[in-house]
Image (cartoon, rainbow, N blue to C red):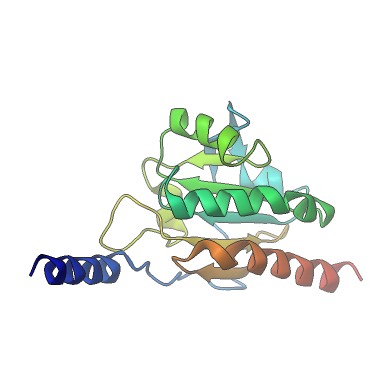
Length: 181
């Protein structure tokens, strides 16, 4: 009886925690933002317009620092940063975690390779339609590639973190090939 109850509970939670499909699509204008961020444990103000002056930016949303899926995704992005940089791209992760938590997460899980930003008011998540349905204030696991013209060239939403880096890297490569061949 208890096992059956736990099974129903897990299925119910999975249904509730499934992220909404991102409403921003390729070609849409990306919402510009500034946010408190951390890189290697050092706090600074991240500006998307400033970052776009240097090349495309992967803006990825994740539910909560130091959880298994978010840690896996941060490790994957950290390992791929050399490839992103070679393409002239940068990465920013965004969650509702506070900056003190992100100072630790940026060092231990992001390995000081890319910044993570605090969105405790869900302002950025809401602008990007990346709030997890039924679980405010958490972000859905959604990744966007924003190109220097301020447009979204790619979006991907999946609770499973395993394909976000592969997919965004492929999207950046495709954009780079099309615009710099």
